[in-house]
Image 1: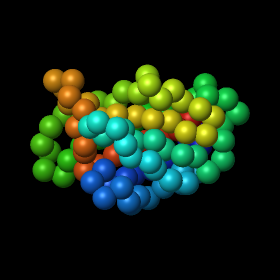
Image 2: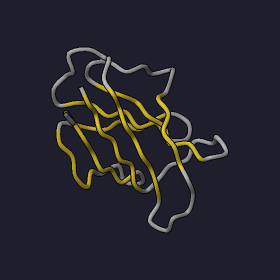
Image 3: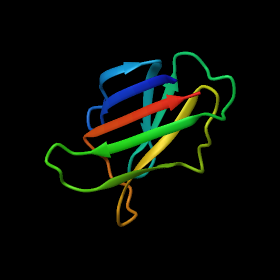
Image 4: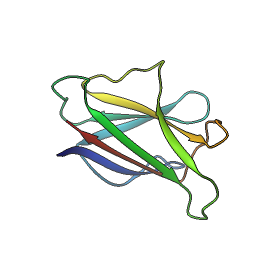
Length: 99
């Protein structure tokens, strides 16, 4: 069951839609998005699915968890990466948390 999700504008950091996510913190080189949960998960052993893209289709992205900021029961940090391995801000940032 999805416990939290968000559709974020990665440039303005405003949520288009979300549930179970209280806020997002952006920081670090490139784009690090830390999603803070409204209600903490029982443990940090949850599944975080993330996807990124741009309206003009300009680029392919994949998500990685940031090893310098491990998941906690109340947040997860993800980074959009280009296929060449460069951290790249994206217009559309999607995340779903399952626990």
